[in-house]
Length: 640
Image 1 (cartoon, one colour):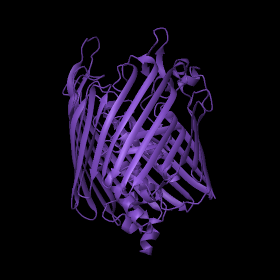
Image 2: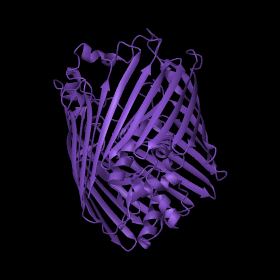
Image 3: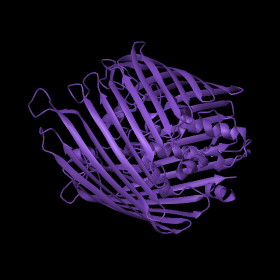
Image 4: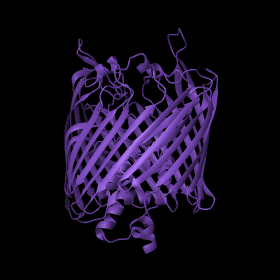
């Protein structure tokens, strides 16, 4: 037992965490997942007297896992970690994440802690927007975040300036939180997520490319300080959450009010807004005119009841804009006012879990999702059904499906995960879907089938082997030059990925990946294919110094056959590269901690496409076939 607790007390290995997130999160959501994890690492969830669903805010933690851990701890606060996680089927890294993101103390002492980080990006080549003076700002790209906590209080401030923007704090976000066992109060900027995601959801989605089983059962009930720099992803105002218990019966009531100016395209002469601007850059006169152009007022009320393994809840959310929206987006609604009412419920045991949510937008357009998970010995099954009316609208909602937007889609998803041996795990999913009406990009309703099979073999001596095969066929269309109507065809994309990781010696880790794609367009356009591969070495030179180097080579016919690779540069900085055309990438990463409270992160990246004269697009074009960038981040932590 002491050996077990010693193991759990160790810090999370960055490479182990990186591998877990890549395998169980889709590439396009990794940044949000890491930001969420770092938030709860810095602000652990208190287990004592926690709600059964308290841990569902963490990636890949379902309701059953959360409620079981909370119940076991509150029955015996001195329980060992071995007993706390017994029978839950969590990997070592999942257990370490939960440990680092939770607080076991019954009465945490009043102490002060703070964290400040600043990150800058230096681009060696000058982009067209600066060269032609289209960007009104300078070349500096700076991100800052400050957090401070004392007892039950927490303060957070975020500032960000992108290349070409004018002000050092072109974006800012400030929020304060007070939290006790029963009460949570947030003033400033915050995120909210309720139910299964039809109305309000967290910033990351955990879609089909993530955990095949757990991600099919979305549930959340939380408010937290904002961690993102995206101007459309948070509320600004006040939020309150109140919890009270009667024996095993837990009740929670959450409400918030928000008033914020959103970036938007507004026609002041006609007094209408044509779209919400989500690109998040304000560098040119045109972009700056969109900043804070549309006033938004919103209100939400959420009630949830927990009894052991049962949860029932209801959410009401309303939103009003200064100008009516006239948008064709499947997220944005028509008009100046909108509301959503939702009912949701969950039931979860060791063997079976099921739940769902039913919602009405504007009192008449329905949305529904239902899911179930079955566990038999070492085999798990998941089933997820969703159906969203074509006119259903929810800007912050989440669809576990082909599109992340909960609108104009019906589908059924099924998956299986089997642990065939101590070291071998096999998973697969199949998703069938269709839209009720045409989509924004295709002139006819679409239908598709998407499936994936992956195998993970993990052996301490041989290393980790990871193989994924994925295929998707769906309706698509394009309009030839001069034609009035689209050519409709079936777009089929096949992918295969092989990944291998092994510790060559104690402090040296090897990681390599190979991806191949094959894309067909039903003979309406020429077929395409491509590949990408990388080789990476990570070396812990000292306890406080590590270095990572990666070289990538790729060759695809066009963007349609691109391969997506992540670059984890440093905490809260991860980028997913679409690798297309012919070229190579280089990444060098250095982590150094000269003092206990100070951590330095340095990263250098280079993208090269030898056969091209320019890289980028529009005002971000550079007159070179090489794109060199340098990143520096400083973290200063203090704790009494």
